Length: 412
Image (cartoon, rainbow, N blue to C red; front, side, top):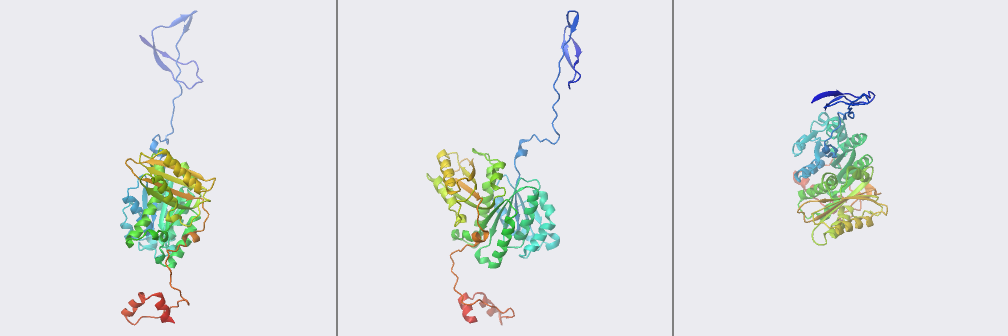
Protein backbone atom coordinates (compact mmCIF):
# COMPACT_ATOMS: atom_id res chain seq x y z
CA UNK A 1 0.00 0.00 0.00
CA UNK A 2 1.18 3.45 -0.66
CA UNK A 3 -0.26 6.87 0.09
CA UNK A 4 -1.16 9.25 -2.65
CA UNK A 5 -1.94 12.88 -2.02
CA UNK A 6 -5.45 13.75 -3.02
CA UNK A 7 -6.23 17.37 -3.74
CA UNK A 8 -9.33 19.23 -4.76
CA UNK A 9 -10.04 20.47 -8.22
CA UNK A 10 -12.40 23.12 -6.80
CA UNK A 11 -10.20 25.87 -5.40
CA UNK A 12 -13.13 28.20 -4.83
CA UNK A 13 -14.35 26.06 -1.87
CA UNK A 14 -12.79 26.40 1.57
CA UNK A 15 -11.51 22.83 1.60
CA UNK A 16 -8.25 21.32 2.66
CA UNK A 17 -6.20 18.70 0.87
CA UNK A 18 -5.82 15.40 2.75
CA UNK A 19 -4.05 12.08 2.31
CA UNK A 20 -6.05 8.92 1.65
CA UNK A 21 -4.71 5.38 1.17
CA UNK A 22 -5.25 3.81 -2.24
CA UNK A 23 -4.01 0.69 -3.99
CA UNK A 24 -4.74 1.42 -7.55
CA UNK A 25 -5.34 4.16 -10.01
CA UNK A 26 -8.22 3.17 -12.23
CA UNK A 27 -8.11 4.06 -15.91
CA UNK A 28 -11.23 4.44 -18.02
CA UNK A 29 -11.08 5.42 -21.66
CA UNK A 30 -7.44 6.29 -21.26
CA UNK A 31 -8.30 8.87 -18.61
CA UNK A 32 -7.08 8.61 -15.08
CA UNK A 33 -9.80 8.55 -12.42
CA UNK A 34 -8.68 10.02 -9.14
CA UNK A 35 -10.35 10.01 -5.79
CA UNK A 36 -11.30 13.35 -4.33
CA UNK A 37 -12.40 14.14 -0.77
CA UNK A 38 -13.52 17.59 0.33
CA UNK A 39 -13.88 18.43 4.06
CA UNK A 40 -16.38 21.02 5.32
CA UNK A 41 -14.98 24.28 6.70
CA UNK A 42 -13.65 24.06 10.23
CA UNK A 43 -16.16 25.32 12.80
CA UNK A 44 -14.74 28.15 14.85
CA UNK A 45 -16.39 29.33 18.11
CA UNK A 46 -16.05 32.88 19.41
CA UNK A 47 -13.46 33.23 22.12
CA UNK A 48 -15.96 34.85 24.50
CA UNK A 49 -18.52 32.06 24.13
CA UNK A 50 -19.03 30.23 27.43
CA UNK A 51 -20.32 26.70 26.87
CA UNK A 52 -20.83 26.12 30.60
CA UNK A 53 -24.59 25.71 31.18
CA UNK A 54 -24.24 27.18 34.66
CA UNK A 55 -23.50 30.57 33.12
CA UNK A 56 -27.20 30.86 32.16
CA UNK A 57 -28.31 30.82 35.80
CA UNK A 58 -29.40 34.35 36.78
CA UNK A 59 -27.28 35.97 39.45
CA UNK A 60 -29.37 37.10 42.42
CA UNK A 61 -28.00 39.36 45.15
CA UNK A 62 -29.59 40.69 48.32
CA UNK A 63 -28.23 44.08 49.43
CA UNK A 64 -28.90 44.91 53.06
CA UNK A 65 -28.78 48.67 53.69
CA UNK A 66 -28.45 50.12 57.16
CA UNK A 67 -29.15 48.39 60.44
CA UNK A 68 -32.54 46.94 59.48
CA UNK A 69 -31.31 45.63 56.15
CA UNK A 70 -28.21 44.09 57.74
CA UNK A 71 -30.32 42.27 60.34
CA UNK A 72 -32.56 40.89 57.60
CA UNK A 73 -29.55 39.60 55.65
CA UNK A 74 -28.19 37.94 58.79
CA UNK A 75 -31.48 36.06 59.18
CA UNK A 76 -31.37 34.87 55.56
CA UNK A 77 -27.79 33.65 55.91
CA UNK A 78 -28.48 31.84 59.17
CA UNK A 79 -31.49 30.15 57.59
CA UNK A 80 -29.28 29.06 54.68
CA UNK A 81 -31.09 30.73 51.81
CA UNK A 82 -29.36 29.12 48.82
CA UNK A 83 -28.66 30.42 45.34
CA UNK A 84 -28.32 34.01 46.49
CA UNK A 85 -25.33 36.27 47.16
CA UNK A 86 -25.38 38.67 50.10
CA UNK A 87 -23.87 42.13 50.49
CA UNK A 88 -24.39 44.48 53.43
CA UNK A 89 -23.55 48.16 53.71
CA UNK A 90 -23.87 50.59 56.58
CA UNK A 91 -22.57 53.92 57.80
CA UNK A 92 -22.11 52.49 61.30
CA UNK A 93 -18.81 50.60 61.28
CA UNK A 94 -19.43 48.96 64.66
CA UNK A 95 -22.81 47.57 63.61
CA UNK A 96 -21.35 46.45 60.28
CA UNK A 97 -18.78 44.28 62.03
CA UNK A 98 -21.56 42.32 63.73
CA UNK A 99 -22.89 41.07 60.38
CA UNK A 100 -22.27 37.46 59.37
CA UNK A 101 -22.15 38.39 55.68
CA UNK A 102 -18.90 37.92 53.79
CA UNK A 103 -19.14 41.11 51.73
CA UNK A 104 -19.33 44.24 53.89
CA UNK A 105 -19.11 47.84 52.72
CA UNK A 106 -18.73 50.84 54.98
CA UNK A 107 -20.63 53.70 53.43
CA UNK A 108 -19.22 57.22 53.42
CA UNK A 109 -15.97 56.66 55.26
CA UNK A 110 -15.05 60.31 54.71
CA UNK A 111 -18.54 61.66 55.36
CA UNK A 112 -19.49 59.73 58.49
CA UNK A 113 -16.14 58.26 59.65
CA UNK A 114 -18.01 55.08 60.54
CA UNK A 115 -20.18 56.77 63.17
CA UNK A 116 -23.56 56.39 61.47
CA UNK A 117 -25.99 58.76 59.76
CA UNK A 118 -27.63 60.14 62.90
CA UNK A 119 -31.16 59.37 61.57
CA UNK A 120 -30.58 61.98 58.84
CA UNK A 121 -31.49 60.69 55.34
CA UNK A 122 -29.39 63.41 53.72
CA UNK A 123 -26.26 61.99 55.32
CA UNK A 124 -27.25 58.49 54.24
CA UNK A 125 -27.71 59.71 50.68
CA UNK A 126 -24.32 61.43 50.57
CA UNK A 127 -22.63 58.39 52.11
CA UNK A 128 -24.03 56.10 49.41
CA UNK A 129 -22.99 58.53 46.69
CA UNK A 130 -19.45 58.48 48.07
CA UNK A 131 -19.28 54.66 48.07
CA UNK A 132 -21.45 54.00 45.01
CA UNK A 133 -18.60 52.70 42.86
CA UNK A 134 -17.62 50.10 45.44
CA UNK A 135 -21.21 48.95 45.92
CA UNK A 136 -21.80 48.63 42.19
CA UNK A 137 -18.69 46.49 41.84
CA UNK A 138 -20.67 43.76 43.63
CA UNK A 139 -23.97 44.37 41.84
CA UNK A 140 -23.06 45.36 38.29
CA UNK A 141 -23.23 41.81 36.88
CA UNK A 142 -26.47 40.80 38.62
CA UNK A 143 -29.73 39.88 36.94
CA UNK A 144 -31.90 40.56 39.99
CA UNK A 145 -31.16 42.64 43.09
CA UNK A 146 -33.24 42.78 46.26
CA UNK A 147 -32.85 45.91 48.35
CA UNK A 148 -33.75 45.39 52.01
CA UNK A 149 -33.84 48.27 54.45
CA UNK A 150 -35.67 49.62 57.44
CA UNK A 151 -37.18 52.97 56.49
CA UNK A 152 -37.39 55.87 58.88
CA UNK A 153 -33.72 56.11 59.84
CA UNK A 154 -30.84 57.80 58.08
CA UNK A 155 -28.88 55.15 56.18
CA UNK A 156 -31.69 53.02 54.74
CA UNK A 157 -34.00 55.92 53.90
CA UNK A 158 -31.32 58.03 52.26
CA UNK A 159 -29.12 55.41 50.61
CA UNK A 160 -31.72 53.06 49.08
CA UNK A 161 -32.96 55.46 46.33
CA UNK A 162 -29.37 56.22 45.27
CA UNK A 163 -28.36 52.61 44.68
CA UNK A 164 -31.76 51.86 43.12
CA UNK A 165 -31.20 54.60 40.55
CA UNK A 166 -27.77 53.18 39.67
CA UNK A 167 -29.22 49.69 39.22
CA UNK A 168 -32.04 50.90 37.00
CA UNK A 169 -29.53 52.77 34.84
CA UNK A 170 -27.96 49.37 34.05
CA UNK A 171 -31.38 47.79 33.42
CA UNK A 172 -31.04 45.42 36.37
CA UNK A 173 -34.31 44.09 37.76
CA UNK A 174 -34.64 45.77 41.15
CA UNK A 175 -37.06 44.76 43.91
CA UNK A 176 -37.17 46.65 47.19
CA UNK A 177 -38.47 45.00 50.36
CA UNK A 178 -38.60 47.65 53.07
CA UNK A 179 -40.20 47.99 56.48
CA UNK A 180 -41.83 50.90 58.25
CA UNK A 181 -41.46 51.68 61.95
CA UNK A 182 -43.67 50.39 64.72
CA UNK A 183 -46.19 52.84 66.07
CA UNK A 184 -44.23 53.28 69.28
CA UNK A 185 -41.15 54.51 67.37
CA UNK A 186 -42.43 58.12 67.22
CA UNK A 187 -44.41 59.93 64.47
CA UNK A 188 -41.37 61.72 63.08
CA UNK A 189 -39.74 58.43 62.15
CA UNK A 190 -42.91 57.33 60.35
CA UNK A 191 -43.07 60.57 58.38
CA UNK A 192 -39.47 60.08 57.31
CA UNK A 193 -40.22 56.50 56.29
CA UNK A 194 -43.24 57.44 54.17
CA UNK A 195 -41.25 60.14 52.37
CA UNK A 196 -38.43 57.67 51.66
CA UNK A 197 -40.83 55.00 50.41
CA UNK A 198 -42.54 57.44 48.07
CA UNK A 199 -39.18 58.35 46.53
CA UNK A 200 -38.01 54.74 46.31
CA UNK A 201 -41.22 53.45 44.71
CA UNK A 202 -40.73 55.81 41.76
CA UNK A 203 -37.39 54.16 40.91
CA UNK A 204 -37.52 50.41 41.60
CA UNK A 205 -39.41 47.89 39.47
CA UNK A 206 -41.34 46.43 42.39
CA UNK A 207 -41.77 47.97 45.82
CA UNK A 208 -42.79 45.60 48.64
CA UNK A 209 -43.62 47.45 51.84
CA UNK A 210 -43.88 45.60 55.15
CA UNK A 211 -45.63 47.78 57.76
CA UNK A 212 -44.32 46.50 61.08
CA UNK A 213 -47.46 47.68 62.85
CA UNK A 214 -49.54 45.21 60.83
CA UNK A 215 -47.61 42.40 62.48
CA UNK A 216 -48.63 43.48 65.98
CA UNK A 217 -51.56 41.07 65.96
CA UNK A 218 -49.04 38.19 65.95
CA UNK A 219 -47.08 39.53 68.85
CA UNK A 220 -47.61 38.04 72.24
CA UNK A 221 -43.89 37.55 72.53
CA UNK A 222 -40.80 39.27 73.79
CA UNK A 223 -39.69 42.62 72.41
CA UNK A 224 -36.62 41.35 70.56
CA UNK A 225 -38.63 38.52 69.02
CA UNK A 226 -40.94 41.06 67.38
CA UNK A 227 -38.08 42.22 65.16
CA UNK A 228 -37.22 38.61 64.34
CA UNK A 229 -40.76 38.24 63.02
CA UNK A 230 -40.12 41.20 60.72
CA UNK A 231 -36.92 39.53 59.48
CA UNK A 232 -38.96 36.38 58.86
CA UNK A 233 -41.28 38.29 56.54
CA UNK A 234 -38.35 39.77 54.62
CA UNK A 235 -36.86 36.29 54.34
CA UNK A 236 -40.13 34.93 52.93
CA UNK A 237 -40.29 37.73 50.38
CA UNK A 238 -36.85 36.98 48.95
CA UNK A 239 -37.25 33.21 49.17
CA UNK A 240 -40.55 33.20 47.28
CA UNK A 241 -38.79 34.65 44.23
CA UNK A 242 -35.35 33.07 44.52
CA UNK A 243 -36.74 29.54 44.85
CA UNK A 244 -38.55 29.94 41.54
CA UNK A 245 -35.25 30.69 39.82
CA UNK A 246 -32.77 28.49 41.69
CA UNK A 247 -34.68 25.31 42.59
CA UNK A 248 -35.52 23.03 39.63
CA UNK A 249 -39.28 22.68 39.73
CA UNK A 250 -41.85 20.34 38.26
CA UNK A 251 -43.57 23.41 36.85
CA UNK A 252 -40.53 25.52 36.15
CA UNK A 253 -40.35 29.31 35.79
CA UNK A 254 -37.46 31.12 34.17
CA UNK A 255 -36.11 34.60 34.67
CA UNK A 256 -38.22 35.98 31.85
CA UNK A 257 -41.38 34.79 33.62
CA UNK A 258 -40.37 36.45 36.86
CA UNK A 259 -39.37 39.61 35.03
CA UNK A 260 -42.79 39.75 33.35
CA UNK A 261 -44.49 40.02 36.74
CA UNK A 262 -41.98 42.23 38.57
CA UNK A 263 -40.74 44.57 35.83
CA UNK A 264 -42.16 48.09 36.29
CA UNK A 265 -45.03 46.73 38.40
CA UNK A 266 -44.96 49.46 41.06
CA UNK A 267 -46.47 48.74 44.46
CA UNK A 268 -46.87 45.12 45.50
CA UNK A 269 -47.88 43.15 48.57
CA UNK A 270 -46.72 39.82 49.96
CA UNK A 271 -48.69 37.00 51.53
CA UNK A 272 -47.75 33.47 52.52
CA UNK A 273 -49.30 30.50 54.23
CA UNK A 274 -48.09 27.11 55.43
CA UNK A 275 -50.34 24.20 56.36
CA UNK A 276 -50.26 20.42 56.84
CA UNK A 277 -52.93 17.75 56.90
CA UNK A 278 -55.67 16.61 54.55
CA UNK A 279 -56.99 20.13 53.83
CA UNK A 280 -53.58 21.80 53.69
CA UNK A 281 -54.09 23.35 50.23
CA UNK A 282 -57.26 25.15 51.33
CA UNK A 283 -55.77 26.48 54.54
CA UNK A 284 -52.42 27.46 53.00
CA UNK A 285 -53.85 29.51 50.13
CA UNK A 286 -56.48 31.14 52.35
CA UNK A 287 -53.83 32.09 54.90
CA UNK A 288 -51.72 33.55 52.11
CA UNK A 289 -54.51 35.74 50.74
CA UNK A 290 -55.90 36.62 54.17
CA UNK A 291 -52.45 37.41 55.55
CA UNK A 292 -52.18 40.28 57.96
CA UNK A 293 -50.04 42.15 55.42
CA UNK A 294 -52.97 42.03 52.96
CA UNK A 295 -55.53 43.24 55.45
CA UNK A 296 -57.71 46.06 54.08
CA UNK A 297 -56.05 45.68 50.66
CA UNK A 298 -58.42 45.14 47.75
CA UNK A 299 -56.76 42.71 45.35
CA UNK A 300 -59.61 42.34 42.87
CA UNK A 301 -57.86 44.79 40.60
CA UNK A 302 -54.51 42.98 40.72
CA UNK A 303 -53.15 42.36 37.23
CA UNK A 304 -49.94 40.46 38.04
CA UNK A 305 -49.43 37.59 40.45
CA UNK A 306 -46.28 35.58 41.09
CA UNK A 307 -46.91 32.45 43.16
CA UNK A 308 -44.66 29.72 44.48
CA UNK A 309 -46.04 26.38 45.69
CA UNK A 310 -43.60 24.22 47.63
CA UNK A 311 -44.37 20.78 49.04
CA UNK A 312 -43.20 17.20 49.21
CA UNK A 313 -43.52 14.57 46.52
CA UNK A 314 -47.09 13.80 47.64
CA UNK A 315 -48.48 17.06 46.20
CA UNK A 316 -51.54 16.21 44.13
CA UNK A 317 -52.77 17.82 40.94
CA UNK A 318 -56.08 18.60 42.65
CA UNK A 319 -54.28 20.65 45.30
CA UNK A 320 -52.34 22.59 42.68
CA UNK A 321 -55.45 23.23 40.61
CA UNK A 322 -57.42 24.39 43.64
CA UNK A 323 -54.74 26.88 44.68
CA UNK A 324 -54.35 28.36 41.20
CA UNK A 325 -58.12 28.66 40.68
CA UNK A 326 -58.65 30.18 44.12
CA UNK A 327 -56.05 32.90 43.53
CA UNK A 328 -57.29 33.66 40.01
CA UNK A 329 -60.85 34.09 41.27
CA UNK A 330 -59.74 36.72 43.79
CA UNK A 331 -57.89 38.88 41.23
CA UNK A 332 -58.82 40.70 38.04
CA UNK A 333 -60.35 38.62 35.22
CA UNK A 334 -57.36 39.37 32.97
CA UNK A 335 -54.76 38.67 35.66
CA UNK A 336 -51.38 37.39 34.53
CA UNK A 337 -50.74 34.55 36.97
CA UNK A 338 -47.35 32.85 36.81
CA UNK A 339 -46.57 30.16 39.35
CA UNK A 340 -44.01 27.48 39.93
CA UNK A 341 -44.16 24.18 41.79
CA UNK A 342 -41.10 22.99 43.69
CA UNK A 343 -40.66 19.68 45.46
CA UNK A 344 -38.60 19.24 48.61
CA UNK A 345 -38.06 15.67 49.68
CA UNK A 346 -39.66 14.62 52.99
CA UNK A 347 -41.53 17.93 53.31
CA UNK A 348 -44.91 17.30 54.94
CA UNK A 349 -46.27 20.85 54.79
CA UNK A 350 -47.54 22.78 51.81
CA UNK A 351 -46.27 26.34 51.45
CA UNK A 352 -47.84 29.04 49.28
CA UNK A 353 -46.07 32.37 48.75
CA UNK A 354 -47.77 35.07 46.70
CA UNK A 355 -46.52 38.42 45.42
CA UNK A 356 -49.40 40.51 44.10
CA UNK A 357 -48.45 43.50 41.97
CA UNK A 358 -50.23 45.89 39.68
CA UNK A 359 -52.18 47.23 42.65
CA UNK A 360 -53.38 50.80 42.84
CA UNK A 361 -53.20 52.05 46.37
CA UNK A 362 -51.61 54.94 48.15
CA UNK A 363 -48.65 54.29 50.38
CA UNK A 364 -50.09 56.77 52.85
CA UNK A 365 -53.34 54.80 53.15
CA UNK A 366 -51.55 51.47 53.34
CA UNK A 367 -49.15 52.62 56.01
CA UNK A 368 -51.70 54.34 58.22
CA UNK A 369 -52.41 51.32 60.37
CA UNK A 370 -54.04 51.30 63.77
CA UNK A 371 -53.07 48.66 66.30
CA UNK A 372 -56.32 49.08 68.16
CA UNK A 373 -54.79 51.28 70.85
CA UNK A 374 -57.01 54.16 71.89
CA UNK A 375 -55.16 57.27 72.97
CA UNK A 376 -56.74 59.38 75.71
CA UNK A 377 -58.47 62.50 74.43
CA UNK A 378 -56.54 65.75 74.71
CA UNK A 379 -58.63 68.91 74.67
CA UNK A 380 -55.68 71.24 74.03
CA UNK A 381 -52.33 70.68 72.30
CA UNK A 382 -49.41 70.15 74.63
CA UNK A 383 -46.88 72.97 74.60
CA UNK A 384 -43.55 72.44 76.25
CA UNK A 385 -41.13 75.15 77.26
CA UNK A 386 -37.73 74.22 75.78
CA UNK A 387 -36.00 76.32 78.47
CA UNK A 388 -37.53 74.31 81.31
CA UNK A 389 -35.05 72.27 83.33
CA UNK A 390 -36.04 69.91 86.17
CA UNK A 391 -34.71 70.83 89.59
CA UNK A 392 -33.55 67.34 90.43
CA UNK A 393 -32.81 63.98 88.87
CA UNK A 394 -35.90 62.54 90.58
CA UNK A 395 -38.11 65.22 88.99
CA UNK A 396 -36.57 64.47 85.59
CA UNK A 397 -37.34 60.75 85.94
CA UNK A 398 -40.88 61.48 87.03
CA UNK A 399 -41.49 63.45 83.85
CA UNK A 400 -40.51 60.44 81.76
CA UNK A 401 -43.17 58.15 83.25
CA UNK A 402 -45.94 60.71 83.47
CA UNK A 403 -49.12 59.77 81.57
CA UNK A 404 -50.89 61.95 79.00
CA UNK A 405 -53.99 62.77 81.12
CA UNK A 406 -51.83 63.64 84.15
CA UNK A 407 -49.53 65.74 81.96
CA UNK A 408 -52.55 67.60 80.56
CA UNK A 409 -53.99 68.18 84.02
CA UNK A 410 -50.71 69.62 85.32
CA UNK A 411 -50.48 71.99 82.36
CA UNK A 412 -54.01 73.23 82.81
